[in-house]
Length: 327
Image 1: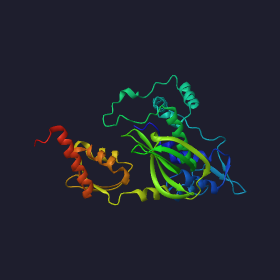
Image 2: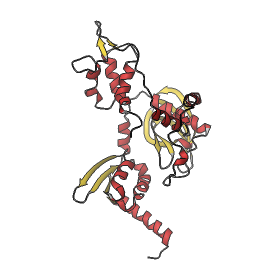
Image 3: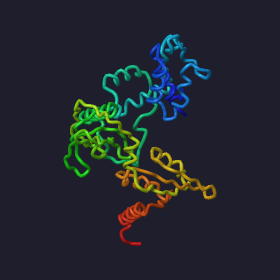
Image 4: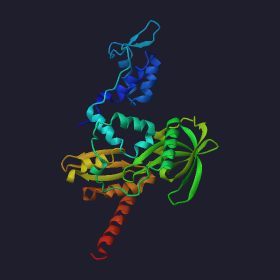
């Protein structure tokens, strides 16, 4: 069951944004589709919005060639009871304060006062998560996260003081490209470029929880950068090659766990097995290995040899911890 209807998906949001104004033009339509849609949306969506033989009838063309919406008012999104229940449940998540200010949260709580939450956090017990997750309720952490998020959205150049993974103090001038959340670690981290004299020196990764201070320089990084190019530069030289069996619903669980990873999958119809080539950030190799080992006998790491050897060493250490040197 989908909580949020697909009618309120990407195409609805694009159309709704264009319909906020009574009058627009073809350039604005195409620019909005490019910025808000999928990569291939520009191939077919503009002709559904711009008056033609196959449009959706949302605009009519004026004599001056502008586009006027046919509705008197902008479209209104109506929330169902189920959606309100989901939203009420999300308001109890401490991470909500990272993305919304306290005034907005209180307003939502007031409006949803008579709505029962869809679920409560105490209903869930997660056994495969680290306990030392970020402190989402810490005011300093919230301020740093919001500053980092603003830097990502507006490509601001920021000065950051932080602790490295080895506990050493570090600082630098950065442009932040993307913030990612690791469910297993319970931590947010920022992908970034280190700058020297406004030139890119190297790529990096900073955990939000290790940031001591983040200061806006008041400047914007205007050099075009591609997030795709950034991740390609950090991608492992050889993909992990994994054989996945369907025992204990292994294939579905594996695909769900690695849904955000770049991969190539081949299915063996006779054995009902899958061989997956999995690409990942080289700096995340240890985390990826732990994720793979959590599947137990459902998978086999076929290569590369270095990753297979690391898996073997970890399994041998775990065996010795459990059973000693016997057997």
